Length: 102
Image 1 (cartoon, rainbow, N blue to C red):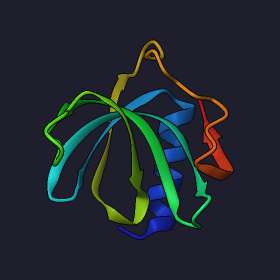
Image 2: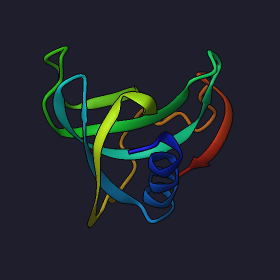
Image 3: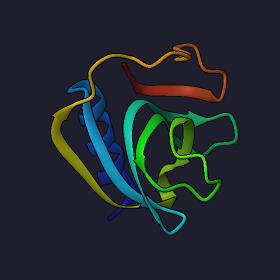
């Protein structure tokens, strides 16, 4: 799926407070998305709280960054993401430009 379509879907998911699922680095992730935008390195980036699936690090739950170009098979669930987990950084300095945030 082209990055433009994925980024539009991520913006919608953030605006609607939806949980998403996608494959990243070969494993399925289930994530509450919170910020999408351009990183300070010039990559389209998602900041989210992973709540399920697997992780290459072995640590499934927690705040993580995902390069949008590496995300595959993005699915937006009808289920909402509920409360904001502890540690949310609304003014995240990893982002040069924020397109959407919760």
